[in-house]
Length: 339
Image (tube, rainbow, N blue to C red; front, top):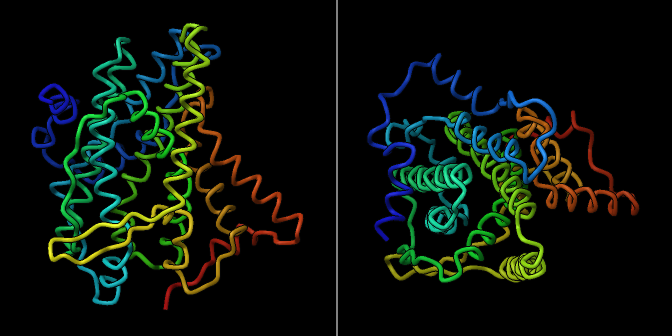
């Protein structure tokens, strides 16, 4: 376990060893760099090629945002807003998910032999560790009751665990982008809290961009005889994720109170965010728009996650067949504030 801890606490730097908080201008520049990147390598970036692999690693390294969770100034929330935030049924799952993600990615990074991909996935593990710290600081700042965290045990099948985490993030992030937009435009979260979490949301975009390109690279360089077994494993991962999302996770806090955590909150949690009825078509449209915006600044030659956007497009197509069209983008942007 020492080697794993070294990976996710010391790369690229220990959180405590990061330089002092930058100026406002430097923060804006770092934020811009984290959202906009193009490779200087000419021509196509074909998955499996050295050029593609080097570009992926460079993208993840050069778009790093050096924000520090330990110095985030959490805004003071009015009582009604505080109640809304603390009552969301997501915090236990969010903290534990990041805890598992950092361990799984660090474990997988330890197995990767290619230096470029090893570097990128190790950095991904470090950033997952930072996400967990951000959530832990928020929970502490707002006094959110939490269940005791389970022990984080290194997975027996490291590749399986990495695939579960990667595919989960690809789907959950797509819908989280939409939910975050609803929370922003409806006023459910105050502007200060939205601004605080925005770098974390964009970081999730970078994470799933890395995973999609790792997957394309891994498939391309994999020996042909291994490919059938790997694709069966991918199908099994999806079956597991579907099963997992059919249920609810139940946890117990330090006072013995049972809390039910919704595994599908990123999909069905919009009703918590606004007093206006947002249809399924509206929400799919919001997710698709926000997903496109977050990926727009990265080199178009890199592979994008496709499954969740394709699912959303299929749902929109099916809903249009029965006359349930989404509202126009301008109407979606004008979603009114919560009461």
